[in-house]
Image (cartoon, rainbow, N blue to C red; front, top):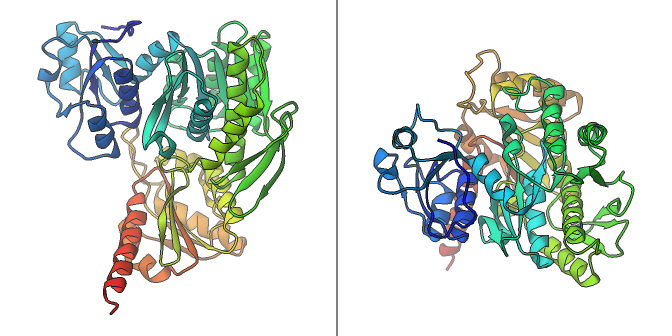
Length: 494
């Protein structure tokens, strides 16, 4: 039984199936903040979201039909669960309790507010987080939802400064973003990805165009002028909907949000925007992050203009936004710094597409030119690895030492015995040997590399785990081992 969220959520009883998922947990924060009474269920495994759910007062139980008996008004579920696979959804169906997917619930919430959706194959998480810290600096009455934990949000995925506006990360996979109802969209990038659902570029581009064309009359599209796919999608959307307003940003963009003079000084990325006099400074590495920041500034400027009769951002607002930008330390698994021990800087990054890998490593090389760059990568999904094999193989040129592993499996596709981590390793060795960087290693399981890396890492290194797999555990293990060794040395001193 389908449903919509009521305008007033005070006292409305909602149960979340798959509550520990990043997106569903973030939605729980918004629902609790709006006054709903929320419970949840999930597997027994511990995730960082357990702490968030406990802090906002959402009890989480094992899956059981009993959880939806006794007066639940609505069940919201992750798309990972269906009535055929989950006892709670089956019971809700039997009892006639309305149900919604996460995407549908977020979409229903967006329809009741002045909403902005941030999308793209790359950069949407960081752009949304940056938009959140800038919206807070500009004192906008908005709630913000990001698909990752953000340090500036107190380690959570949302912040709420009011309920008039909503800024949310929206996902293209299986066209989930079509449930979202924005007034304006930020489009960071379009290129082939999710090959299990979009077989080619034309298919994924069509989804983004569909999202843009669904905007209301005179809707706004803020797009990255440096990304060919984003420009392509915008051009097609504009042809279908001439009433849409396009705002480009980036190094090649005309207008206020054209970027100039990017440089790195003392581990800060510094740039200007053509329409504003001040400098913008970033402590997170990479020109791609600077692009995300420019998109976030453009979004805040568009929101202010729409709310206040075409008003431009004031100098005080711009200064506060620039200060918020420089204090931004990233989000979970986006160039996330674990710490430094023994002179080795440990970092973790979610980059799992060749373009993201290439831009992230280039940014790290530019920010830390004196450090040896040691990269541990685990590919995710056979379909993506197979479709982009050559692109993956050539994306690690900036790494001084690369360690590869098996392909991290996905429940959404069957294993492919012909597309393996070993195949990616062999192709990468061939590609990088030509580039003069032959230091490559292969270990089937990430933790199998623990002994090798413990002996290999040395002071001055930057060690980064990359990918959407579970090799982050290797980085954590090495970092914790380094801390323990350092503490033992200190205790051993007279």
